[in-house]
Every structure is written in C-alpha cells, then in structure tokens.
Image 1: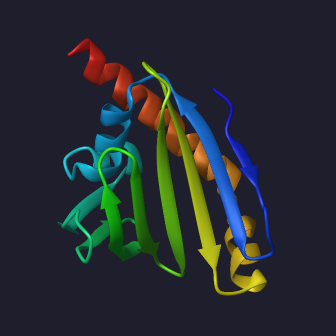
Image 2: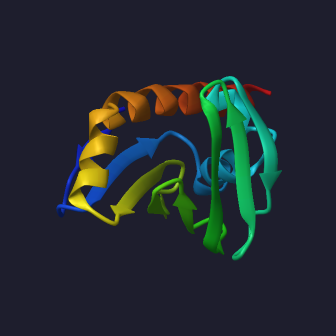
Length: 141
C-alpha cells in the first residue's frame, strides 16, 4: 500500500492510506487501548477515554505523548489534540477496505516544518506497516 503525504497549506500535513480491512476494524486500531502498543511499539497506555472531552496519554521509550479527544464519531471520524497540533482522522468506508485521511493542523509553519523534519512519511509508513500486520493477525485469529 502507498502512503501519500502532502502539505496542503503552510500549517497542515495530510496523510492518506488505504488499509485492507473494514472501517470498524481500522477504527478499533486507533481506539482500543489494548491494540495501541501493538502498532506504537514499546508503549504503555496510561489513559484512553475515547469520547469528546476524554483524554489519552501514552508513555513511550521517548517520553509521554498525550492529547484530548474533541470529537469521536465511530467508526468514521476522530478529532484530537496530539502534542502541538490538532489531528483529524477520517475513516472512509470502501467496503472491505478503508481509506484513512489524517490531517494535522499546526499553529505555525515552523511547527509544521519541524514535524516534517522528524520524518513524517517514514514514520507513517512504518506505523502503517505494523497496522497492516495487526489487522492481518486479527483476521487470522
């Protein structure tokens, strides 16, 4: 599968990817605290209250990552803060496949460029490959 990363404006990053799984299963990968460590890697989910106003907090080998859910519409949409930006995830139903569109909105071009400099495309591709493996494992189980 191909991961497409674009910068539609000077304060946004958009990532799109199609997964070979139905939308409910792909949505669960983002919202089930037991599944998060399977694709985030060495991660402990300390808090995950998946509802508007709920908070999430993960401890990783690199420190704490946290945010707040602003909108949760299962299995179609999540809007949440993610460290220094607002992230919108839209899960488009393609039957037995799902298109994920992930939009990151930053306060400044500098913040966006700093995140791009961390290697967003390679990071997304690596994470999505782990999600592919997790989805395949869940189908086989």
